[in-house]
Image (cartoon, rainbow over all chains, first blue to last red; front, side, top):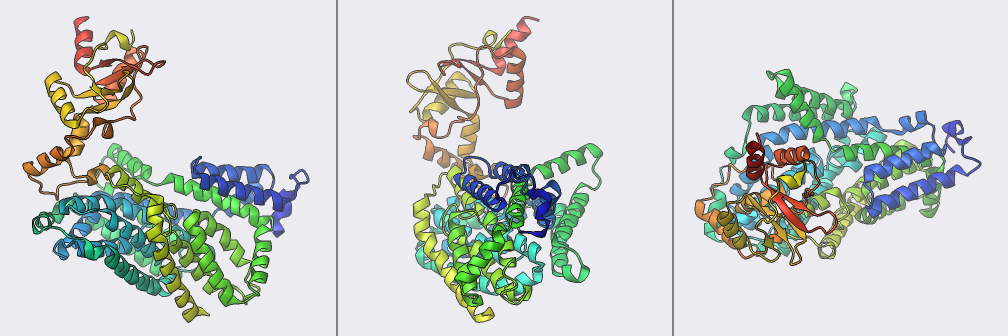
Length: 447
Length: 150
């Protein structure tokens, strides 16, 4: 049991805190998976029950929340909310389509690259929200089925997001909990992510891309798109690009500057809002700032807050320490076996359940293994395995990652249907290929 | 005063299965902004009108995100016409707005006017018990009735 736990355990009416906290965690997971109740409501209720039942007191619950993660997510959401208004994402998508002379296979390739790069710098859901509508416009002009390109974009968003600290929520939580920096993620994950993206591009080309064709007349229609017209505010474009540049620089220099990524992102968000509102009267500023804040995904933010408290409850009750001991015993205390087990288990589970609560639960569990593997340094292969498994595993099914469901939802609205089994038949094997590549990489580099 | 005092009780309707082309000709003939869609028993299903037709005239990507700007697209009049021709034989229920919570005959007049102000549309009036369409309130006729009494 956690040393602090005696503070709260006295109000449990004699119930075993390990059982109580485990039941709350399982109930929270089940309710999130059922999708009957919004996940933010579920996690906040779970947190409230942990406190009401005395597993945690209020101070412990607040301490359980990783405010660096919350600040990083919120800050980046604000930056994207302001930036998207200038039309830069449409510009890049159209520009890239024209670079390949509107050849459908080339467009499929370019949009995967664009999606992967944007996803590495921004949230995956945001990226697909910006790329999918313009993809649908391009496909309609070419008179080609958008489905193959949209599936390829789902993969690119999840693969690209794996490359950096800020690309995917599991990485944000792992980085914040372990002190691994933006540069650590780039040095350790970006190389393998590039390989995985190249292989995935090749698979999609063989599977679909080479069969896509459009008439010269329809390609001409895309070539007539004027990407400069997509930019609605050149001043805002320059301001946004400058702020994003300095925010990324801040992430790179975070360790030397003794700054947490959350501070960098939130400061960048404040500076961008300041620049975007310079010269406006107070009422307009209020309106604009209010609008920007409404575009923050508060469901995700409050989901994280509640989830951190729930996980903190099971951690304080000693459940995760016990599970860590079981896992170490099952793998015989062998680092290689443990790393590969975490990689594959994370991938398979992340294809089925939400990877965010899974990773949030795994972090304290893995930290508890430090004594077995020679301290925090010895855990590095496990963190990279967890990240690769959790982020890439999301590609396996339509419910594996939020970005997948977002693409499916947008496509359905525009008349392209996504079916769970149809998607999984294609996606799951390709996801397994990415995990196989990750296995070779982790083995070769760390074990 | 309630909604029933300003509603038209026998509005033109589109019956489920009517095509987009049918709807366009009825909208023009009746000089309406939109029309209620009902099933064979008169049960209210949704609204179909100018707003839905404009969306059908735009690239499909617009349906995925209606906030995206399309200034970069240089479609001709013919392209837009072709887009509408492609859906002319589709049933209206595929594209109608089925989300709007209709007014009832007992909705207070001020609330009726407020909803019209917010929606900027003609609105269906539905019996809450039977779910059948009982009328429609239009901006033009309600203002006409209200101005006539002043």
